[in-house]
Amino acid sequence: MPTTSASAERHAAVVYNPIKVDLARLEKGVADAQHAAGWGETLWFATTEEDAGQGQTRAAIAQGAEVVLAVGGDGTVRAVAEALRGTGVPIALVPSGTGNLLARNLNLTLTHQVESIGAAFTGGERRIDLGIAEIERADGTTEEHVFLVMAGLGLDAKMIARTNPKLKKAVGWLAYVDAGVRVLPSLEPIRLRFSLDGSPERSTSVHTVIIGNCGALPGGILLMPDAKPDDGLLDIAALRPRGPFGWLKVWNKVAWENGVLRKSAIGRSIIDLTADVKDVLYFTGKDLRLTVEAPQDFQLDGDPFCEAAAVHAWVDPGALAVKIPA
Image (cartoon, rainbow, N blue to C red; front, side, top):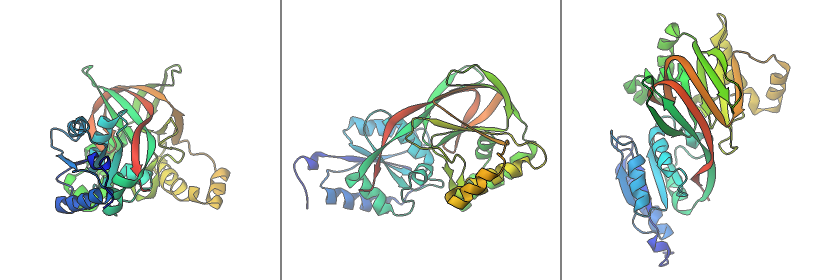
């Protein structure tokens, strides 16, 4: 066994959602990887309804954890990352939920748990940016949270807020389609004011604003084709379908053009020859401020948060280290 007195003093921590994991299997996998790497005993923390993982992660850091394995869905990963922000302690992703958005965007395995766990103890590190969102409610109170993949206001947030949890458990991300069908008939444009990177404030009307640190969603949907998790920028997409075929044009843009054509040289040539779709607008920047005419549903990495009257979003470059396979 490759142990040394120094390595034996190293400890990992696991922050896991007890509803979404096979605990016995997880414990065995961690124990095997821990002993093979010569680390000390791993610390274990279960999330609760009251604490999605921030408090448990802070406790793990206080107890000397040198890496934190986030085992659960996107909400668990986001909560762990929020507490790790700027600490230098890396996160290891052990996907167990529906979307596994960050793992997808970093091209990490979604199904091989042994590989995910092994990366925590023997893998390298990749530093990525974090998106930060300060959310202001209608009563003037504010709260600040991180997001790893996307934050959204409008249609996507309404879909997430109205997704049937039982259906989501049964069919995964396809449950959002059901919610979207129910939301679309009553969806109205959102009037808002915005400023990007300190530019003069402008007014516009949209159905959705999505602020991205990464660009890929389940189902092969590449919503933001140029988004990179380590470029120090936020990618912003504004969906504003016009006319009776507006939503069809939006779907064609994100599912066919971004998700299929961009993957080949021929496909990219076809895109260059076609007219740009004005129903989907893209921007990049480091700091976005927006105020809506009436409070709107707001989501972070696929979890509904609150109704936001205003949002200030910015990028924290390289604020999180992620473990990757050696």
